[in-house]
Length: 242
Ligand SMILES: Nc1ncnc2c1ncn2[C@@H]1O[C@H](COP(=O)(O)OP(=O)(O)O)[C@@H](O)[C@H]1O
Ligand SMILES: [Mg+2]
Image (cartoon, rainbow, N blue to C red; front, side):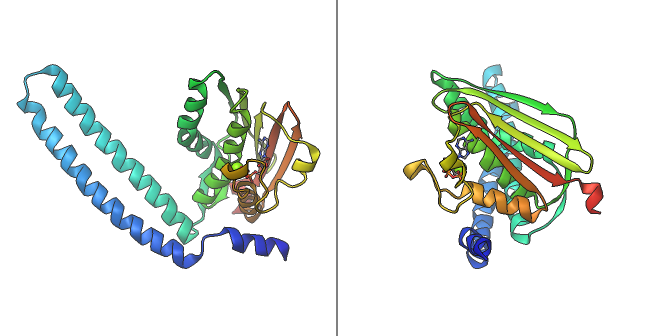
């Protein structure tokens, strides 16, 4: 009962989502049209210039437009998939890589300062599961974000371990950040609970837990103040689901 209420509170109402989707479709369309102009003109100009440097720059501009277009398409497909609640075979390994890609700017930002976050990956399985790609990404992203935020001041190590045990896929995300006292640990899955003041929403882990459980998964957490935290998610392997 309580969980149902939490779900309703945190999910974007269907109608607003539809409006957002339509709006973004229009924006993406315009954006892609402008990209076509940049791409077309840069390409047309390449044979017309003498300087090798400028020709090379034009080539780079042209390639960048393709990357932008791909990024827009990927983003649109994923929010559309979320809206459609489309479920399919997904690889947790691929999701980890795409989430790390989304977070590289955040990790780089920390690493520009005095501290450094090191990432260690140990992946021994593609981790095939059945589910909604956007939701799975979202649930894993929230844990990664918290881990990075926990190490922002001190730096540390982010250990990511993906393995398969019998018919389940296990993802363990361990940080060496600030850790949690027991009274915090007891409340992390409460809606709107945050220790980050205005910077936090206290929604990340509620959403993560809901998504994991909706995919017949489980989530566990261990933490020690000053030493770090580890989250473990396990999900049924795809073959078993079929
Ligand atoms: N890796 C972590 N290390 C330390 N504390 C954490 C970690 N992950 C979650 N927490 C605690 O759980 C709280 C709730 O997390 P979350 O639901 O993601 O909301 P938010 O990040 O907006 O505060 C955080 O405010 C923090 O106190
Ligand atoms: Mg968070």
